Length: 406
Image (tube, rainbow, N blue to C red; front, top):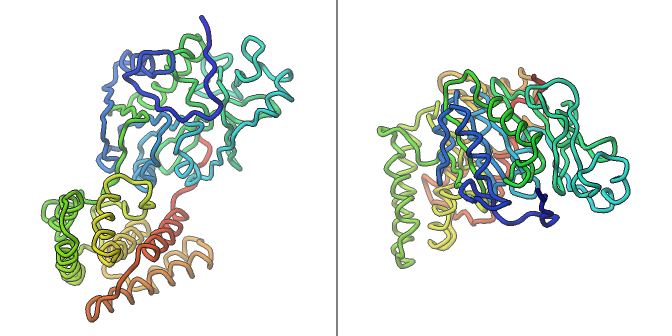
C-alpha cells in the first residue's frame, strides 16, 4: 500500500462517487455498512433537517449556510465538518474555532520530534488525548499536510504532537454536537486503507448517528448546501414574492422590465410587512449570509443588480428577517418594541457594544422602511452588503458557545 502525497493546499473537490485514491467512496461504504439511512444529495436545504439527523461535511468549496447549521445544532442535530483548505472557515469561526495552516517550515523543523508515517514529515500522525468515543480503538490518525485547530477552552480529541496543534475537536452547541477535523485527507480512500483511520471513520459515523433514529447526510465538495429563504409556509404572505424572485432571477428580461417588476415587488413587500408578516417567523435567517458565498440567494440578488443595482427589496426583507430572528432567539412575546429587545439582550448578559450595534442597525432599517412607504430610497449593493454584514455579526454573537462535551 502506498500513501499518496497530495498538494499542500487542496483545491480539487472530493466526491463520494469517486473510487480513485483521493475519493470518498470508502467513507460512503463505511457509513452505509453502519445500518443507518445514508443520503448524498446534490442539493440539501439545511433548514429542512430534523434535529435527530446528522450532517457530515467534507471539504466544502462553498461556504455552508452558517445560520441554518447553527439552528440545526441548537435544536439537537449533530454535525461534523472535515476541512483543511476548503470553505469551512466561517462556520468554524462562528463557534470560536480558528483554523490555521501548518507551515512546511514547522514540518521540517519539528517533524523528527513528532510521530510521522514512514519517516515523512508531511504525514504527521495525530495521537488521541484522553478518552472519547471518536478515539476509541485508534492508536494514531494519519494525516497528509493538515491544518490545525485552536479553541480557547476545548481540549483536543486528537493532537499533532507538542509542536503542531489540534487535529480533532468536539463539543456541544445547545442540544447538539459539533466535531471539527482539520484534514480532509484522513477520510479519503487511500488513507482509509490504514486500520486506525478506518476505525476513526467508523467511530465518527457511530458518534453522529447512534440511537438517534435519523438520517445521515454526507455533503462532499459537490453538494450544494442552501439555507431557508423562500421556504415559507404555503399561507405565508411572502411566499408568492419569494417564488417570483426565484423564477425571475434566471429569466433574460430587458432591464426596463426588471425595473418595473422590482418596483411592484417592493410595494407588495411593504404591504405584507405592514399587515401580515408574523412576528415569530417560521423561516431561518438565510438573508444574513454574505451574498457572494451563497447559492439560492445569490440568484435573487442578481435580479436587483440587473434592475440598476437597487437593493431596496432585499433590504426590507433583511429587516424582517433580523427582527424575527431576534424575537425567536430572545423568546420575546407579542409586538416587542426596540427597548424590549435591548432589555432582553441586557438581561442575558450581552455587552453594551452589542446592544449599541443592535440599536443602531434596527433604527437604520426602520428608517429605510418608513422612507420606502413614501418616496422609496435607492439602496446600492455596497450599502446592502454592509447591512447584511452588520446583521450577521450581531446574530453570530447570539449563537450559543461551543462547550466541552463527551
